[in-house]
Length: 218
Image (cartoon, rainbow, N blue to C red):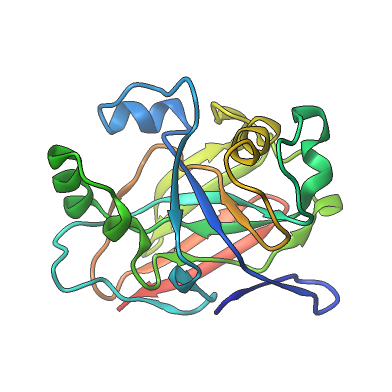
């Protein structure tokens, strides 16, 4: 899967960069025993991390503590560099629902050694992605209920109003470093409640005005 597909009209965009924010909800920062950031914490995933709805997440054999993280995803619609916050929403094509699957034990070990998180965050199938909806289908992306259930049990439940950095700030910051292009995906961070998954688990994510995403852990 290297395209983001829209629910209406059969449209799709080829995915370029997957830019992700860490610790963008204060309660999640607290549960990770970290300070809330004053500037966005950014990491990347390769496009090969994408997984279609209904797909199977494959956890690498060396991981002992895989975790789920549900996120609102912004789909970029046009190229921009050094985008002003006031102009940022003009670069949004739509919204999707994603999971930032994380090899938590691998990530924590990397942190201890001062090493990058790339393996923990970028492995194949680490970015399940729903179909997208166009921008005009979402009245206010900063007031959407977002949740995740594992085998029917509610694990994460929050609202995008709790994000530390809103979409205009995220786009302005990211575009000051990376040229944003049509098809780039911006994973906007996860709320509190992240936790372990196991082989055979079913993950059911939901984002108001966007829809649902169901995947299984192989």
